[in-house]
View 1 (cartoon, helix red, strand yellow):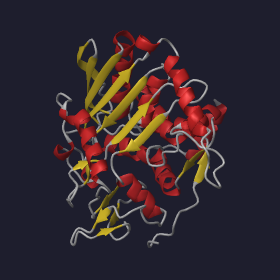
View 2 (view 1 turned 180 degrees about the horizontal axis):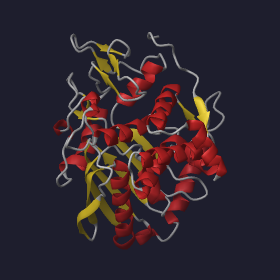
View 3 (view 1 turned 60 degrees about the vertical axis):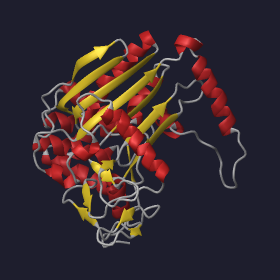
Length: 379
């Protein structure tokens, strides 16, 4: 355990209240109503799906970038090029949430007409959890994939210098009686959010994913290398570069870069983005993220309406009826519990370190948590 007391007891909060708070804070920071609504909804989706570092934990990032001016809160993403089955969105240094929502909306519309569409985004800031965007397509009866790159957060296989992305990758198919199957993973063993989560909870990583910067020896302990940034609960630096556990994850990471960077017109690739995270504490003229790609497929063009949903239910029933190991009460599909939590409006878990940072953010813009709670309850 590190010098900080472990914060193992997670807090529980009403997601509707948190989304209200996000929206109000962003409006105080100069976000237009539409922009604040989109970012708040996307951050809340991370909370509701149990993404500790991509819900409230990620809210620090748009706040930081708006304060420094790296994110232009007055800018609006725009479609700058398109064809029948593809679209390019320039974020104009706006939020990733707005740019990716626009790219996904456009790709869904094109896939409805042409069966498949690809959307690219560039020049935008952090976009949070990518399951948010593929669920948009699943709700329209379509399959989707989505990824983006990031500042360098992992070393190549055999290396000990972060030059590759901490990329998210999400995919979803439409559900029927059961929720959609939603794969929402990262093409990296640990990113900066995972490191801060382990540090603040006083625990080690799940594997030897850090390389000592002097010796190259691998370790699972972030504490000796972790560099906390005052007043933040997630944003942090780590002196030890991260590594992959296998060549397969290394290859998968580069696959995400092929989509987000190599074939994305005008996008930067991860090695071309500055780091570490502390670099972004100062105002920058470039956006935090290099590029993103979304792919949407409408199977109704060759299967008929709802056929994919029915087939998904068949697969889910087989998976959930499999023989269970001792002590396992139910087998879940990826994304199932998050989807059910959203439907039930269930309370969400948040880390104490994230809550403390969030309260400071609320106070810093002249708002008060309890006043916001009363405001929300009165609506």
